[in-house]
Length: 283
Image (cartoon, rainbow, N blue to C red):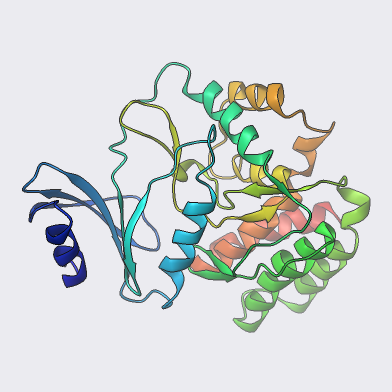
């Protein structure tokens, strides 16, 4: 069902009336639909009647922050409320020939936007899980407290992890400085798996559904390998713009523990084995 606010806004802003409403697949949290209007326009509507009341405004803030010249394209947000978000329709098509090379360079350019602090102007969401983003001077403290330990406490409260696994996460959180290099706080998408890497109508790179904040660029790249790795040419092109420290691939499991804990909290015990496997590796 299309919210009344959306139909009124479309009419008042010259888009006309909705003449077609096609649901799209792929969303695990929200429902997506492509709207066609009587003026020949196409827009994308996300809805979720169970969404936290600030979830979509937090997404809008992320979309706006990621609108960086030379970075991957981001859909423009038009209108939002507690249970919907109306966006520019990027009209994805086939990837152009140099898609992955362009994507690597563009993401590196996005990551070159840095801050003296880790965090973000507001807390937001990773999927539908709250993602705290208090401004923090120390990246190790930020990742330990606001990423790993925040998620593991949720998992423990829901009975998804036992005390031994919780202790292993707590122990790993104290060892981050010995396992990870010093890195600046970079502007990152925050939830960059293959499903959020799409194209625009010309086949150019575009990214959607952010959990934006200033964090570690290596953590972003780690997630690109978690649910179907991007091709080698993407990482090669990235390093042409923004070289990475030796051994970055071996560090990915630490960063991906955050996302696996989140998936455990969102979708249940099927992810417990992957969480436990990473924890055993770093004991």
